[in-house]
Every structure is written in C-alpha cells, then in structure tokens.
Amino acid sequence: MTTAALPQLLRPRALAPGDLVVVASLSGPLHARFEPDLEQAVVVLERMGFCVRRAPLLEAGRHRWWSAATPAEIAREFNALLRDPQVRAIIAHDGGQTALGYLDLIDIEAIRADPKPILGHSDISLLHLMLYAQTGLVGFHTDLATPGLGGHWQAASTARRAELEKLYSTLLTGPEPIGALPAGPSWECWHTGRTEGRLIGGVINRIVLNQATRYALPLERFDGAVLFWEEVGGHASHVWSYLQVLRHAGILDRISGMVVGVPTAVEGLGSPEGAPTLREIVLDALGDRGIPVLGNVEIGHAGPNLPMPVGTHVALDAQQRTLSLLESAVRPPTVTGPGS
Image (cartoon, rainbow, N blue to C red; front, side):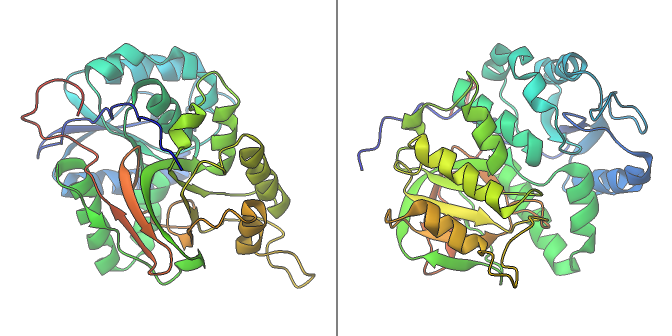
C-alpha cells in the first residue's frame, strides 16, 4: 500500500508541574449525584502535579435538554479556554450528544496559535477527529474526568491506579515516546500480523458521523493508518452496519491494522441463539483484507482507558498482543512555535 504524505502533526507543548488543567462541560451536563466523582477526578489530576480549575458551565444541575448548555454557549466557553494562555490542557467532564452541534463554532486559529491537549473520549471523539482533520492537532483519546478518573479509576486496584496516573502524566509531560502500552488479560489476537501507522479512531458511531460532515478526514489520512474504535449501547447489527459504512467509504481498504475496544452494553453479541461475537462481526466486515486485528483493548466505556493519541505513530503486533506508541504526543517546552 502506498502511504500518502501526511500533514505535519500539531503537538501541544509538554505540560510542567503546576500547569493549569481545566475540567469543562464539552458535551453532557453534571448531574448532582456525580459531584463526588468529579471532586475525586480533581484529586487525581492534582496528584499528577497540575493545578485544576472547573469551567463555569460545569455546575451541578445546570443543563439544556441533554447538554450542559446550548452548543453556542459550550463553544463560547471552549473558545475562551483555547485562547487563555494560562490554560495548558482541557479535559472533558463527560461525553454526551452535543459536540456535533458546535464543530462549526470552534476557533480553529486559536488552536493553531496555541495547541493544547484536549482530553476525553465518547462524544469528544468528534473533537479529536475534526481538529486532527482541520489542523493536525494530536487528539488525546483518554478517560473522561467524572466517569473515568473519578469513577472507573476508583474501582481499580491501587496498583492499576498508580500505573494509569504514571501513564497519563507521562503522556502529558514527557516529550519522549511512551513505548509499549501495558497489555491487559482481555487483549485478543483476532487476526495475526504486524504493522506501523498513524493512530486514528474513537467511538465507531462518531467516526461515521464525522465522515458525513464537511469536517471529514480526507481518505488519504487513512492510508496505512491503525484504526481504533469501540462502541457503547445499541445493537450488534448497528456495529456491523457502521463497519459496512467504513467499507463503502473505502476506509477499510486503506488502513493497515485495527484495534477494537471492549464493547459496552451492546445487545445481540454472542447470545445462545447463535448471535455473532464482536470478533466474528469484525472479521466478516474485513473479508479477505488480512490486516492485523487486536481485540478487547481498554480504549472506551468499559473501564479505565489506555491513552490513544490520535495522529501519532504506533506499532501493532496482534499475535504478540502489543501496541506501542512510537512518538510523543507533546513537544518539548523549549521548542518555539505551535507545531512539532
């Protein structure tokens, strides 16, 4: 496969101890019962050495329909954070159903002028994909603040929490590649092979939605890419349909590997009535393409997330069940200019 020339990555500068990280409502609202989880997420970020602030829209009980506020209000606050030189990273409090409503309101020039890590997954996948398409910005596909750092992380073992904190801190502060991500017992080789390529992905329904907008990633961006995805809710048939959309779009013909997350609350998978497993659905959609596929990786709603920096170069060996980050998601703080 011939790999097209890729745009230059736009890396944020590495964070330093004491830098300001803002938790913001970039999609869904904060329900009062999750206030303790948010407070615990702040503790986790502070333990990593950062100063933490909550954005004004992140107020328990505040909402508009299923969102924290109107798309215009969220975009206004988001843009203010992007333009504030004191803010060095933004982490989404939660996912939801709102990012699609303000993609056209984001201050792209502010991102180019001062790129910052934007952390989160779920609905935040749209931001990562759109901003990578528009600017080359590395997308920090990581746990969300409230359900992730303050929720799933707290249910993990002490050793696992310490491992995640070190991993996330290194991701944000270390200009050197992380290397191999810690493999979990759930990881499965669904098709053998080894490849290297740019990491692109998110929730599969958000990938499909983004590709239906004017902010879609050009197909050339998928040449040789390692596509990662997961899904939450819905039905197994929906996952199969999303994969068929990616096939019809030509994306499955261009990628060199695939990483699939642990499915969450997806109905109709592997039931006694003969329903297919997720592995069977994936391999059915891929047909005879023969690319390496690593399945059941912690990159989504099922629990504590391993970081997946969108746009960076990775190595995948499905048979050995390894996934390695080969370049840093941030640039050294001494480098001048916004790019890498």
